Image: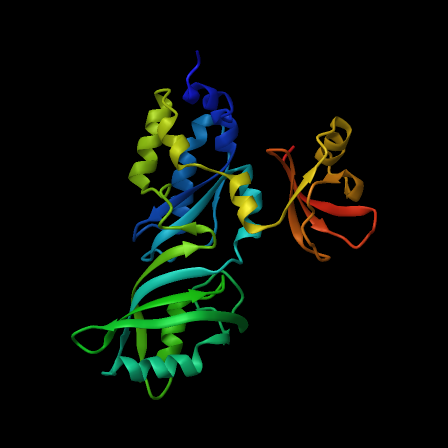
Length: 301
C-alpha cells in the first residue's frame, strides 16, 4: 500500500517546471547590490535551463533583508508585485539631541499620510516629485547618545527611506539627520517571517543538493508563482475545456461564458488570475464588454 507521502509526491510539479516559474526570498546581506544577488541566483541555476532572474524591488547595497527573486518565466510578473507596501526597521541619526516624543510629533506632522518625495540623486528613476503614502513612521527607542533612534516604517512601494530620513533632517527644528542602518522586513506578501526565506549560503546549499539529485531542500524554499499570484489579485475559475484553453494559450480574450463558480467583483481595469482547477492559465485585465471577461496580460503557455 502506498504511503500518504508517496501519494502527495505524485502531485508535485516536476522540478524543472517549478524552477522555471517560481520565486525565492533571499535574506540579502549588506554589501552586494540587488542586481548582484539576482545574478548570483541565476548563475547557480543556469545549468538547469534557467535563462533569467530578476528582483522585486531594489535594496541599496548596505541595506539588508527581504529581496524576492523571480526565476525563469516569473520575471514577467515583476510589474504585478512592485507597487505593494513595504516595511522597514532602521536607525536614524539626528545631528542634535531630541526627546523621542518631540521628534515623533515632528514626524507625525510632516511625514505621515500622503507626502511628496523626490528620488535621491543616486537612483534609477527620473528625479521628479512623486506622491507616496507613509502609513507608519514610528520611533521605537532612543539611543544613549540621544541622537540615534530606532524606527519602523511602513510605506507605499517606491518610497525611499533614506530620503525620508534626510528630508526629516532638513526641517529647521530637527537640524539635520541621516539614516545609519536599514533592514526590509517585508515586501508586499514576502516577509522575513516566511520559513522559506534563505541566506545566499543556504540557497547555494540547496542548489548543490539538487545537483546531487536531492530535490528536498530546493522544494522547501521555492515559492510557486501561482501561489504568490493568488495572494495579490482575485482568482477566477474557468471551464477546463480544451478549446477554451487552446484559445487562451494563444493570447485570445476570455469570455464571460467560460467562467464558472463564484465570480469576484471586478471593476474595469482590474487584474485577475485565471485558473482551470489547480492549473494557472493567465493574468487578465477586466474589460467593460458584456461578452468579454478580460484581455490577457500574461499567459503561461
